[in-house]
Image (cartoon, rainbow, N blue to C red; front, top):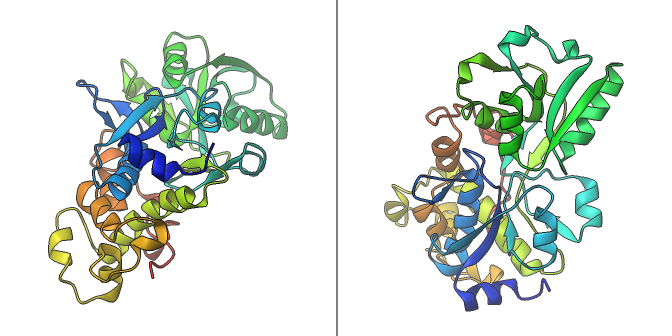
Length: 318
C-alpha cells in the first residue's frame, strides 16, 4: 500500500494530509474554510516540494482514534496532526515518524475559581481528556505516582473536551500544553482559566507516514529539515529569490542553485526553494501560527534552533 506514494501524489495532483478536527495554531479552518496552522504548514511544505505548489493539499480532518487507521489504510498520504512520537507507535503500528515539528509536554488547564495553584492539589478531581491519546496514560502515571485519585471524563475530540470543561463536567482539562493554550482561547472567557505550571511528560509531536516507502519517508523528513535549515541560514520567504545569488555553498545546496540534491529524493532541485518561498522557514511557520505574535502567544522555548538554546536541529543538506 505504501509503495509509490510520490508517484500516486503526482498522478492525482495533490497530497492527502490528515489533520486534526480543529486545533487553533496547529490545524484549524478559518472563516472561509482555509486550513491554517503549524501542522498544516508541514502538509503545504510537502506539496511545495513534490508538486511545486503548496496549495495542492486535500485536508482530511481526523479524530485521535481515527488518525492511525486512516494512514494505515491509505486514506491519507501523510498524518500531520499533533501526534506524539513513542516507541510503541513507531514499532507496532507499521508507521514511521519523520521528525519533530513541535516539542511539547502535557499540562493541566483549570478554572481560576477552583483555587488551585499546582497539579498536586488535584486529588479527587474530575478530569476532561481526549480518548485515544498518550495523555490518558500519562495522567494515570502521574496520579499514581503522587497517590492521588481522579475521575476521567472522556471525549472523542478536543472541541468536545473543551465544551465539557466549560460546561462544568470536569474540574480540570488535561492535554499537551500547546493544545491547552489553543483550547483556552476558545473559552467564552479565557481570562477565567489558567494553565498550571507542571509539565508531566515529554511530547515530541511530528509528521507520520506508512512504513515501507523509504522515498516518501525521506521526502517528508527532509521537507521539515529544509525549513529548519532555511531558518539556520537566514533564508526566508521574503529573501529566497535574492538568496539564490548567495555564494554560501550551504545556501546554494538548499535553494538548488548547486544542482544534485533533488535527485536524491526523486524531486527536482527547486524542492526546498519552493518550500521556503511558498511556506517559509521553520521560524516563520512557528511565529505566525503559535508564536508571540499569534493569538496563542507561545514562546519558542524548546522549539528554538539548537544555536539559540532549543532542540530544533537539521542534518546537513549535502
